[in-house]
Length: 247
Image (cartoon, rainbow, N blue to C red; front, top):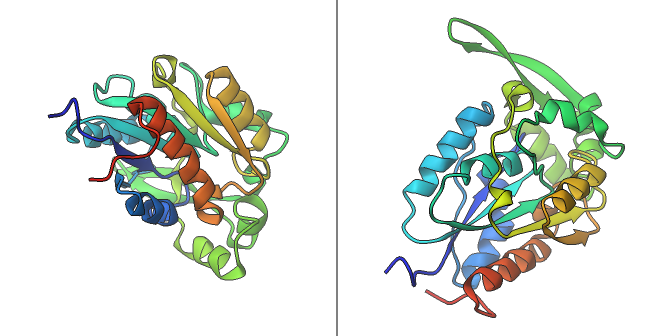
């Protein structure tokens, strides 16, 4: 049964967000009859978040097309390395790190990103002490993160954002799944968070099939149809079907 089961699309969100950032994409995929889930990404560090996501993948019967946004790209790169059911990867305005890279070391190389100047540190308890996490200064959300959303949407992101632990930037990435799986990437040309230049160069290094879209870092919110088109393209490639098969 698992050999003929339609793939499940698993959407992994990035930093400063939760799974609701995929709502527009989920609605459109469900209209097409695609089975889709968007699990929580803990945002506590590469090791923890990748292990959590790998556990989610392990409990899904049948094949998976794994999609990551922003920091979620690093998570899927690690989580899918030993997953037996992942058949393809889609990176959406996402980091595509190689083994041994730390995001905190590569992100400053982007000339397009202004995110670092928009971050503010906070503290949370960890192992009897305190650790650092970062959020976006709400007045800077539009410039650094979501320039093509409405004022109301930008305000909601600023108010509901989930901070990301410093470990997400300092921990080294492991062997990446993109070295053995077919890979697609959406590059938002106005991405000032991850940086369009860095996202593009990482996707090119991974040999991804690249689609460029004029939009901000949160392209899956502002233009879900365009992102869904890439996901459907990937589904067609990994299944040999022109359109997703309805359940």
